[in-house]
Figure (spheres, rainbow, N blue to C red):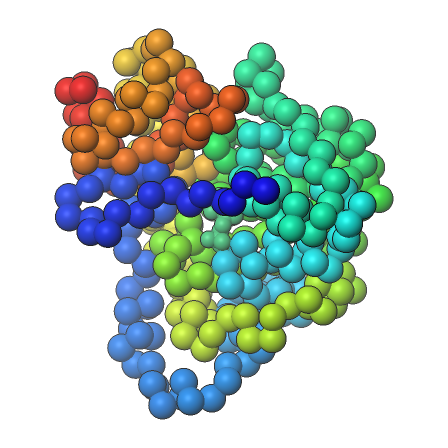
Length: 339
Ligand SMILES: *Cc1c(COP(=O)(O)O)cnc(C)c1O
């Protein structure tokens, strides 16, 4: 199998404009620094609460759900592993649309599953193929909504229909839902085969902390917890994450700024004759005129701007560009014009 290849993380950031891994350009909430300053280091002597209770309660309050619907994870990657370990074994099937987050395939392969990829095409604007996903009838269907790297997004009502068609589990990966028009949280309440995944990596500026969570009805959640690593979330991430998710005012401010820059980035690249797909995440998929994406990626890098090029057939003429701060978008456009 092919290993998962993470986006480049430079050893030193010094002046680099980093728009390649969909991180948040803004620092985490000031409440995070407060927690770190006040953190009682001697408490690290003890094992943490196995369910990251502080965080679980804070998340439940923000989402207006009972705390026992939340499954804490060491990043949402950890939830993907847990779901596959709980629900699948060799000979069962994993279904997902492509292109998408490649980790569904990685973990499906580890479990020896049949991997069924449902391609989304340029002709259809990379729309998420709900009917074809239903027809594929996976034991587990993964759907990133908004999807990455395309930015495509589908209405929660259509996912409700999909969940109703499937006998297996529908995992709606909402890593980017903070930036979309709506989310599918209510489906986790309505459907006993739906799991929603959320992360603090993107919308809460905490990719380095490693904290994500799943939302599912208690019966399904109980099954998932059977394969959870015992102490998968440390005391420090739990405390920091609780403070970050509780600060919704700050979160909304950051999201608003990113949405304004997303609109600007799309407009400016459109004026530069790029094809820009409508994107509901904190990034845009674009195809530069001539489609020479690899070359452009290298030229931007030489000017200190990192964007993402995916060396795969369906992405060869495209780039995925994360939405940065106003200053970063300006720097990116300057590098684009100068190359
Ligand atoms: C970034 C991303 C994740 C990973 O989130 P972590 O919580 O940092 O592990 C999951 N799914 C998708 C689609 C992503 O883009």
